[in-house]
Image (spheres, rainbow, N blue to C red):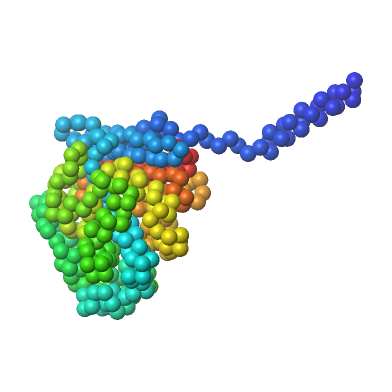
Length: 374
């Protein structure tokens, strides 16, 4: 009897040991209720409205908040929105495809393609490479600081956003200031880099940067709801009103001329289109494996962020990180993110760009879905 008790006890203890050695069960997959919770958190952080689409083993879409603060109409998940600096990743893909075709090299200087354009005040296009433009290591002053710096009232802001700019005018504005640092000696985000890249693309191909984006990215991926508006100021329908808060005053941005952003941030899109793009980028569908690796070679940027060739990297709470880019233009905050294999992605658009808390809440949504998977 004693022996039988010992055997039973040993067996029970062995089961306990095995259970203790087993890894904890993974959290349940990210579901529709989780998405709605995270969307509501973005709204509660101060956003007028927010829409999002996440992908994994399935696609989830959702919305929270309003399209217009006055009418209180709910925001449409099929809305068009301004993607802002997500545009930079599209321009970067075009440049890297041109590298693949041996039409230019990442080591080419700006002077090689745009002779005499970058000069004065310590700026020297002979010392700046295409790769440094892509990676924001050129040191060139950001013309956006000058544009926004001259805004001292809502009326001045409206005037800025109804003005048509040429890329050359934007670059000339930046060259009125000395560089932040010598080329390659640091990192500083500058829209001037991408205004110049748009000019380089046109010089190399004979076509505008957005024509090349359309031919090389939009058409192959069937992104039929993504485009550069040019001087057109109104988004296609349906679209929300965008809101910006300046010095405590909230301004509605239903209309704006996006030529001030050019290749740095002019494109508009929809959730379906931008989600398809980020998934393709994550899977390496748009570039060769070698160029995808090159695009993902990063340098340190502020707040633990890292930046490659038109593509950012940000760590996730579960370990590892995501390839990502956000976009901030008056009235809109947009985030696109994808895992390294393209298996999980998230795209978020907020029609309110005046609150850092909404940006943090938006990244929390990204972190939740990329860590758990939909």
